[in-house]
Amino acid sequence: GYQLGVNYAIGGLSIKANIAKYDDVGTATGGGTNAATAAEAGDELEGTEFIFGYDFGSFKTTFMLIDMSHTDASAGTTTEANGYAANVTMPVATGRVLLNFGDLGDQDAGGAAVADSGKSGFDIGYQHDMSANTYTFVRYSSIEQGTNFTTTAGAQEFDAFLAGIVFSY
Image (cartoon, rainbow, N blue to C red; front, side, top):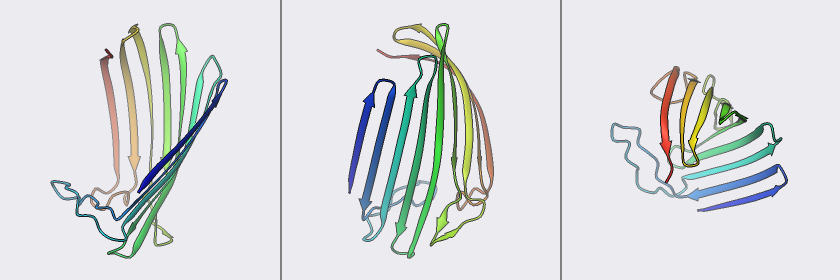
């Protein structure tokens, strides 16, 4: 397999493109151990992402497009999904307000859409700088996944509140 990434930046604009392809991969079994299986001829994973960002000075935005596919040779199927994510970061006083949201659309299996198989969510938070190497944070996240997002879990909604401190030395 291979990975290739390109990054271009000028002024406040940044553009990134990344592609990856892996041949003859083993995938997780989904069982209790979630152990990887042995490599299987014909199994492929592919992914492409494009990231566009701009720093306006008073706030910074990032937008990402993503496309993924998995070919399962033993089952004779290809599953594909694509989506997007966006981020806005705004400096305030001695910290930053963060807003992220994203959506992974319904999956396509064998060329046909799998109903209610997407995932979407958002989070909002604040980071407060304590020093050049330390900050505290609070964040609220909400994620919804469709009934057919996974083969075992069914529809799920997750809400989380996080708070903490990060030391970077």
